[in-house]
Image 1: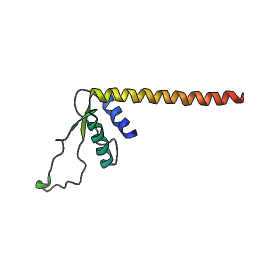
Image 2 (image 1 turned 120 degrees about the vertical axis):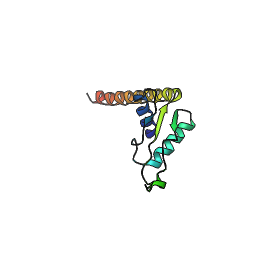
Image 3 (image 1 turned 30 degrees about the vertical axis):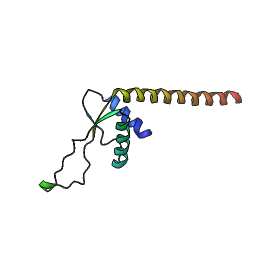
Image 4 (image 1 turned 180 degrees about the vertical axis):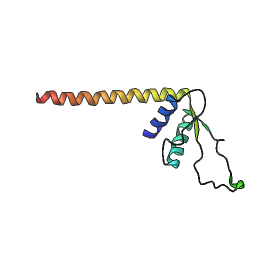
Length: 106
């Protein structure tokens, strides 16, 4: 959930109408791919699956990370803003609880 939020936040902040490189959001490439496929399945992002190239025929190894480019869709933007609102409400509730507990002692 945290990785999905990070992906959507990065795409939302860097949205210029083009595909955005998100390869280096997470060090674990397999985990990043799983999260991206899940977001794609929910119709929240658009992935560019054609960006990776196979250079093995030219003697270059394929053990490097391939660039992953994505673009946020309207469903993803709505979901991100709902998560952002939920996160801010949760943070304010925690702040209220801590202020009430301090007021009890005074």
